Amino acid sequence: MGQKPSVPRPGTKFQVIGAGLPRTGTASFSSALEILCDGPVFHCGTQATLGPTAQIKQWMEILRRWLAGSESDREIMFNVLRSQLDGYAAVTDSPGAQFVPELIQLYPDAKVICTIRDPGSWETSMDQVRNATVPWYLSLVLLPLPGLMWFIPYLRLLAAQWERLYGEAIPTRHTYERHIAWLKEVVPEDRLVFFEVKDGWKPLCEALGKEIPKDRPFPHINDSDAIDEISKTHVRRGLARWGVILAVGAATVAWILRR
Image (cartoon, helix red, strand yellow):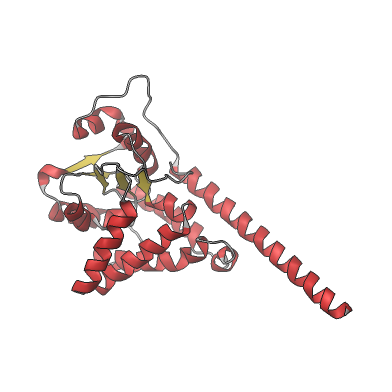
């Protein structure tokens, strides 16, 4: 998790709504949930960048309908959201963390668990993510890659949702604090758990009523390294695809001129 997409498993019971923002240990949290819940976990960042093209396009549809806000849009949004998460035991990361009220309606028995960290270090970490996704050339580089050609428009929709929820599209420590306050408003107190991944198995297992796995260390995935590697991999893939496109184009032009 964090570097490899999960595959849905039909019949899997949905158990956990991950309400933590990106860069709060969501990759480690997701891997731990896969073990405890015995099922695939939908880590939104991973699925959007490495999963099937249909998944990022479905999130775009969900976000557009949420932003539109009419009754008919919300009905469609709920249907697409349910379809997106069918076969998964949990969802983590954004934009899942921004759909907590809707997910509570869809999964009334699911536990809501918010991964947390120091707000100041979170802001610094989010700056790293933003710097990796805003270079002017990124849209062009990703254009030949199925799925990722939609990544920048997807980020714009996500930013629009964050601006509406938190009052700012560019994350700051205030975004983090507003998110925590918002969760306390929209989630019943007996369903909301705050969890720091550095605390390991014990508090998480207690929250879920699960036994601590024997001989299984708590997974610790470095989100920063994972994001950097994924970003570099996609840029390399995009440039390679452009190289092929340009080479084929040049060969075609040369063939036409020789005729």
